[in-house]
Amino acid sequence: MTGVSTVVRRDLEARDIHMRSFGGITEIDIGTVGLSWLMTYAFSKGSTVGKLTNKTLIAISKFTPPTEPVSMRMQSASVMGYDRHYQHVYLYLNGSPVRLFKSLPPSSSINRIELTPESKLVEPKEDQVITLTIQLSEQERLINGELIEIYPSLL
Image (cartoon, rainbow, N blue to C red; front, side, top):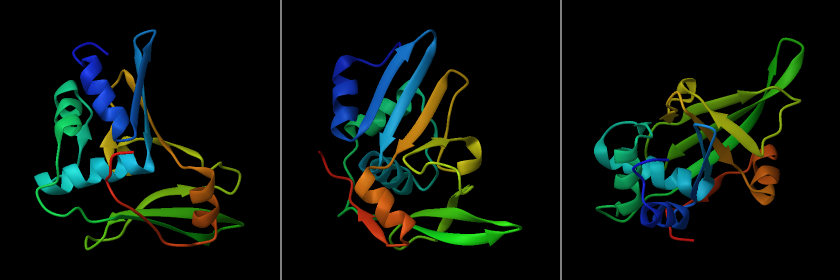
């Protein structure tokens, strides 16, 4: 990705945000700790993250929460929809309103969820594919409806 130095990439990776570019497309893989960083960054600015431009990525790589960071919470619920159950995944910062992040049909895998403008968290640019990666231990807890708390910490 042009305009993002190796130092910025290294700092983003320390925050669980990984990037790779090929064929004019930039893939951004965000782990749950990385999503906690993104949400904490957006919360401190009083807005959503928006598009992951070079400027935004650089700002996130250098960002330090102004106060003690709050946890990002993840939870899911199985909801009957017409003739099958859907997994609704909820993400929010502790103390902020709960938001439905994604509704997944039963056949969907919960380990890699593509972030789209409809997710209201991050808006990919035309040349980006942004994916949230959920670890196996977190997947099992989510499917069982457990509340998972994640803090924006350096890995």
